[in-house]
Image 1 (cartoon, rainbow, N blue to C red):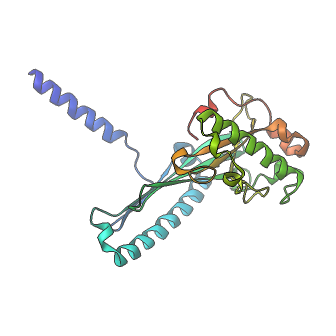
Image 2 (cartoon, rainbow, N blue to C red; image 1 turned 90 degrees about the vertical axis):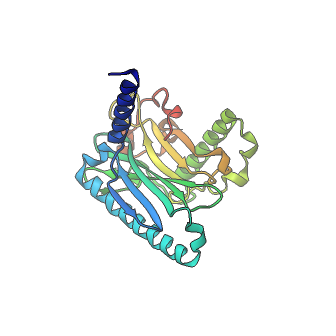
Length: 257
Protein backbone atom coordinates (compact mmCIF):
# COMPACT_ATOMS: atom_id res chain seq x y z
CA UNK A 1 0.00 0.00 0.00
CA UNK A 2 1.42 3.41 -0.97
CA UNK A 3 1.92 6.22 1.48
CA UNK A 4 -1.02 8.08 -0.06
CA UNK A 5 -3.24 5.00 0.25
CA UNK A 6 -2.29 4.62 3.90
CA UNK A 7 -3.04 8.29 4.57
CA UNK A 8 -6.43 8.04 2.85
CA UNK A 9 -7.27 4.87 4.76
CA UNK A 10 -6.34 6.47 8.08
CA UNK A 11 -8.32 9.58 7.21
CA UNK A 12 -11.39 7.52 6.36
CA UNK A 13 -11.03 5.57 9.60
CA UNK A 14 -10.82 8.79 11.62
CA UNK A 15 -13.90 10.22 9.93
CA UNK A 16 -15.83 6.99 10.51
CA UNK A 17 -14.75 6.90 14.17
CA UNK A 18 -15.80 10.52 14.66
CA UNK A 19 -19.18 9.85 13.11
CA UNK A 20 -19.63 6.70 15.16
CA UNK A 21 -18.82 8.65 18.33
CA UNK A 22 -21.43 11.33 17.71
CA UNK A 23 -24.34 10.71 20.08
CA UNK A 24 -27.70 10.07 18.53
CA UNK A 25 -30.47 12.49 19.58
CA UNK A 26 -33.16 11.01 21.82
CA UNK A 27 -35.75 13.13 20.02
CA UNK A 28 -35.50 15.31 16.92
CA UNK A 29 -37.56 17.60 14.71
CA UNK A 30 -36.13 18.42 11.30
CA UNK A 31 -37.81 20.33 8.46
CA UNK A 32 -37.30 23.46 6.35
CA UNK A 33 -38.03 25.71 9.30
CA UNK A 34 -36.02 24.11 12.10
CA UNK A 35 -33.67 21.38 13.20
CA UNK A 36 -34.03 20.72 16.93
CA UNK A 37 -32.59 17.93 19.06
CA UNK A 38 -32.90 16.51 22.57
CA UNK A 39 -30.05 14.61 24.26
CA UNK A 40 -30.20 12.67 27.53
CA UNK A 41 -26.94 11.58 29.14
CA UNK A 42 -26.33 7.94 30.02
CA UNK A 43 -27.03 8.46 33.71
CA UNK A 44 -30.48 9.82 32.97
CA UNK A 45 -31.22 7.02 30.50
CA UNK A 46 -30.41 4.50 33.22
CA UNK A 47 -33.34 5.84 35.29
CA UNK A 48 -36.52 5.04 33.35
CA UNK A 49 -38.78 7.41 35.27
CA UNK A 50 -36.37 10.35 35.10
CA UNK A 51 -35.67 9.71 31.41
CA UNK A 52 -39.39 9.64 30.61
CA UNK A 53 -39.96 12.87 32.53
CA UNK A 54 -37.13 14.71 30.75
CA UNK A 55 -38.11 13.38 27.34
CA UNK A 56 -41.75 14.40 27.77
CA UNK A 57 -40.70 17.92 28.68
CA UNK A 58 -38.11 18.00 25.88
CA UNK A 59 -40.58 16.94 23.20
CA UNK A 60 -42.98 19.71 24.24
CA UNK A 61 -40.08 22.15 23.86
CA UNK A 62 -39.33 20.78 20.37
CA UNK A 63 -42.97 21.09 19.29
CA UNK A 64 -43.30 24.63 20.65
CA UNK A 65 -40.19 25.87 18.84
CA UNK A 66 -41.10 24.02 15.63
CA UNK A 67 -44.46 25.78 15.63
CA UNK A 68 -42.84 29.17 16.20
CA UNK A 69 -40.23 28.54 13.50
CA UNK A 70 -42.89 27.58 10.95
CA UNK A 71 -44.88 30.73 11.73
CA UNK A 72 -41.75 32.89 11.44
CA UNK A 73 -40.79 31.31 8.13
CA UNK A 74 -44.24 31.91 6.76
CA UNK A 75 -44.14 35.56 7.82
CA UNK A 76 -40.47 36.30 6.95
CA UNK A 77 -39.23 33.68 4.46
CA UNK A 78 -36.18 35.78 3.55
CA UNK A 79 -34.62 34.99 6.94
CA UNK A 80 -34.66 31.26 6.14
CA UNK A 81 -32.81 31.36 2.80
CA UNK A 82 -29.68 29.90 4.41
CA UNK A 83 -31.54 27.30 6.43
CA UNK A 84 -33.86 26.97 9.36
CA UNK A 85 -33.48 27.64 13.05
CA UNK A 86 -31.12 25.43 15.04
CA UNK A 87 -32.08 24.34 18.56
CA UNK A 88 -30.58 21.84 20.99
CA UNK A 89 -31.35 20.79 24.55
CA UNK A 90 -29.10 18.59 26.69
CA UNK A 91 -30.08 16.97 29.99
CA UNK A 92 -27.14 15.86 32.15
CA UNK A 93 -26.68 14.71 35.74
CA UNK A 94 -24.77 17.14 37.96
CA UNK A 95 -24.90 15.14 41.21
CA UNK A 96 -26.59 12.27 43.01
CA UNK A 97 -26.96 12.78 46.77
CA UNK A 98 -27.91 10.14 49.35
CA UNK A 99 -28.62 7.83 46.42
CA UNK A 100 -31.94 9.65 46.19
CA UNK A 101 -31.71 13.27 45.07
CA UNK A 102 -30.58 13.73 41.47
CA UNK A 103 -29.61 17.21 40.26
CA UNK A 104 -30.01 17.61 36.50
CA UNK A 105 -28.69 20.44 34.33
CA UNK A 106 -30.79 21.43 31.33
CA UNK A 107 -28.71 23.35 28.79
CA UNK A 108 -30.35 24.95 25.75
CA UNK A 109 -28.81 26.33 22.56
CA UNK A 110 -30.92 28.48 20.22
CA UNK A 111 -30.00 30.00 16.86
CA UNK A 112 -32.83 31.96 15.26
CA UNK A 113 -30.56 33.86 12.83
CA UNK A 114 -30.29 36.85 15.16
CA UNK A 115 -27.14 38.82 15.95
CA UNK A 116 -25.75 35.74 17.73
CA UNK A 117 -27.00 32.40 19.04
CA UNK A 118 -28.39 32.32 22.57
CA UNK A 119 -28.16 29.81 25.38
CA UNK A 120 -30.11 29.09 28.53
CA UNK A 121 -29.66 26.92 31.58
CA UNK A 122 -32.17 25.49 34.01
CA UNK A 123 -32.20 22.69 36.54
CA UNK A 124 -34.26 19.79 37.79
CA UNK A 125 -34.12 18.23 41.26
CA UNK A 126 -35.41 14.66 41.00
CA UNK A 127 -36.48 12.53 43.96
CA UNK A 128 -35.81 8.88 43.09
CA UNK A 129 -37.91 7.64 46.01
CA UNK A 130 -41.01 9.57 44.97
CA UNK A 131 -40.18 9.46 41.23
CA UNK A 132 -40.98 13.14 40.79
CA UNK A 133 -39.48 16.61 40.61
CA UNK A 134 -39.14 18.47 43.89
CA UNK A 135 -37.86 21.80 45.18
CA UNK A 136 -35.17 22.26 47.83
CA UNK A 137 -37.84 22.97 50.48
CA UNK A 138 -37.43 19.62 52.33
CA UNK A 139 -33.89 20.61 53.31
CA UNK A 140 -34.79 23.91 55.02
CA UNK A 141 -36.97 24.84 57.97
CA UNK A 142 -38.66 27.59 55.95
CA UNK A 143 -38.32 29.01 52.46
CA UNK A 144 -40.83 31.88 52.52
CA UNK A 145 -40.27 34.73 50.08
CA UNK A 146 -38.18 37.34 51.88
CA UNK A 147 -37.70 35.02 54.85
CA UNK A 148 -34.45 34.43 56.75
CA UNK A 149 -33.42 31.38 54.70
CA UNK A 150 -33.90 33.04 51.34
CA UNK A 151 -32.22 36.26 52.49
CA UNK A 152 -29.19 34.25 53.66
CA UNK A 153 -29.09 32.46 50.29
CA UNK A 154 -29.26 35.69 48.28
CA UNK A 155 -26.50 37.29 50.36
CA UNK A 156 -24.26 34.25 49.81
CA UNK A 157 -25.11 34.01 46.09
CA UNK A 158 -24.22 37.65 45.44
CA UNK A 159 -20.97 37.29 47.39
CA UNK A 160 -20.08 34.27 45.25
CA UNK A 161 -20.96 36.08 42.02
CA UNK A 162 -18.84 39.08 43.01
CA UNK A 163 -15.90 36.79 43.72
CA UNK A 164 -16.32 35.11 40.34
CA UNK A 165 -16.52 38.45 38.55
CA UNK A 166 -13.33 39.57 40.29
CA UNK A 167 -11.64 36.36 39.15
CA UNK A 168 -12.76 37.02 35.56
CA UNK A 169 -11.75 40.69 35.78
CA UNK A 170 -15.34 41.79 35.18
CA UNK A 171 -15.91 43.51 38.54
CA UNK A 172 -17.34 46.57 36.78
CA UNK A 173 -20.59 44.62 36.29
CA UNK A 174 -20.76 43.41 39.92
CA UNK A 175 -23.50 45.97 40.58
CA UNK A 176 -26.97 46.03 42.12
CA UNK A 177 -28.38 46.65 38.64
CA UNK A 178 -27.07 43.29 37.38
CA UNK A 179 -28.03 41.46 40.57
CA UNK A 180 -31.55 42.85 40.90
CA UNK A 181 -33.02 39.69 39.35
CA UNK A 182 -31.56 37.57 42.17
CA UNK A 183 -34.41 37.85 44.65
CA UNK A 184 -35.06 36.10 48.00
CA UNK A 185 -37.61 33.72 46.50
CA UNK A 186 -37.23 30.11 45.38
CA UNK A 187 -38.73 31.06 42.02
CA UNK A 188 -36.47 34.08 41.48
CA UNK A 189 -33.12 33.33 43.10
CA UNK A 190 -31.85 31.20 40.20
CA UNK A 191 -31.78 27.62 38.95
CA UNK A 192 -30.33 25.48 41.75
CA UNK A 193 -28.52 22.15 42.05
CA UNK A 194 -27.04 20.17 44.91
CA UNK A 195 -23.27 20.50 44.58
CA UNK A 196 -21.14 17.34 44.76
CA UNK A 197 -19.04 16.75 47.87
CA UNK A 198 -15.77 15.24 49.00
CA UNK A 199 -17.92 13.15 51.35
CA UNK A 200 -19.65 10.25 49.60
CA UNK A 201 -23.43 10.54 49.37
CA UNK A 202 -23.44 14.13 50.59
CA UNK A 203 -23.80 17.58 49.03
CA UNK A 204 -21.30 20.34 49.80
CA UNK A 205 -23.90 23.06 49.29
CA UNK A 206 -25.96 24.68 46.57
CA UNK A 207 -24.89 25.86 43.13
CA UNK A 208 -27.00 28.45 41.32
CA UNK A 209 -26.77 28.56 37.52
CA UNK A 210 -27.26 31.73 35.49
CA UNK A 211 -27.40 31.98 31.68
CA UNK A 212 -25.91 34.87 29.67
CA UNK A 213 -27.66 38.20 30.41
CA UNK A 214 -28.99 37.02 33.80
CA UNK A 215 -26.28 38.58 36.00
CA UNK A 216 -23.95 40.08 33.40
CA UNK A 217 -23.68 41.08 29.72
CA UNK A 218 -23.89 38.39 27.05
CA UNK A 219 -20.12 38.50 26.49
CA UNK A 220 -19.51 37.33 30.07
CA UNK A 221 -21.35 34.07 29.43
CA UNK A 222 -22.82 31.86 32.14
CA UNK A 223 -22.17 32.18 35.84
CA UNK A 224 -22.32 29.59 38.62
CA UNK A 225 -22.59 30.75 42.24
CA UNK A 226 -21.67 28.36 45.04
CA UNK A 227 -23.14 28.55 48.55
CA UNK A 228 -21.45 26.17 51.03
CA UNK A 229 -23.80 24.22 53.25
CA UNK A 230 -22.20 25.64 56.40
CA UNK A 231 -23.55 29.09 55.46
CA UNK A 232 -27.09 27.70 55.57
CA UNK A 233 -26.58 25.37 58.56
CA UNK A 234 -28.86 27.39 60.93
CA UNK A 235 -31.75 26.89 58.49
CA UNK A 236 -31.46 23.13 57.84
CA UNK A 237 -34.11 20.54 58.64
CA UNK A 238 -33.20 17.04 59.82
CA UNK A 239 -33.20 15.95 56.17
CA UNK A 240 -30.94 18.85 55.31
CA UNK A 241 -28.50 17.85 58.02
CA UNK A 242 -28.56 14.31 56.62
CA UNK A 243 -27.78 15.23 53.01
CA UNK A 244 -25.29 18.08 53.44
CA UNK A 245 -21.67 17.61 54.44
CA UNK A 246 -18.08 17.64 53.27
CA UNK A 247 -16.49 20.20 50.99
CA UNK A 248 -16.74 21.16 47.34
CA UNK A 249 -14.43 18.88 45.33
CA UNK A 250 -11.26 20.49 44.03
CA UNK A 251 -11.76 21.57 40.44
CA UNK A 252 -15.57 21.57 40.55
CA UNK A 253 -15.65 25.34 40.13
CA UNK A 254 -13.43 25.06 37.05
CA UNK A 255 -15.62 22.56 35.20
CA UNK A 256 -18.35 24.05 32.94
CA UNK A 257 -21.61 23.37 34.72
